Length: 205
Figure (tube, one colour):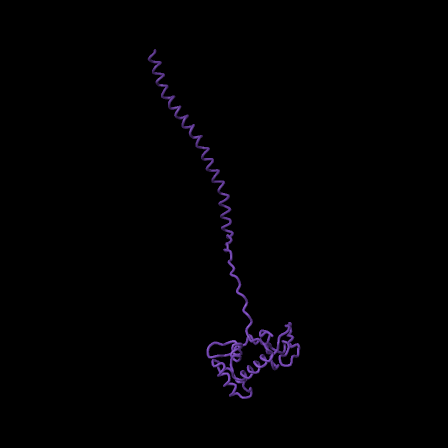
């Protein structure tokens, strides 16, 4: 029988094994008489022994640690009706317990529960912790561009051909200007030649 399935139910004596959980309660089996019954969660509260903690002088400890200390002890279980013997027993078995906050009724309950667990041969230990999940490396998050940035990017793309076109036109214009200069130079040379020709003609006359 697994320790993590053992529960205590408010209003009902003893311990129970949780067989099946339902929306409105649970089907449980008594560890004392073996009877199976349905218990409504609207009337009763369920407490897993695995979730119960005990006050100590330092940090709280899980109830299972007290039970394990009781297992290791050679002291016989005390009479639950004698509060002095109960306290003496736990002072010997689990000296760190905070006896100002752990009452005699609590110690009596622990002795009774431990006895029931022993008789039902329950393995008193916490359920194994879930295996550690493998580390997942997340891909870097790429921030989406804002609408303004997207618009600016589109605008840049649109403007690029215009700039290219302007550059091409500038290249085309340069050859046109060159012939104009050549024509001008030709005109100037012809004007220089005219006086020379006129002078030659006059000389011949």
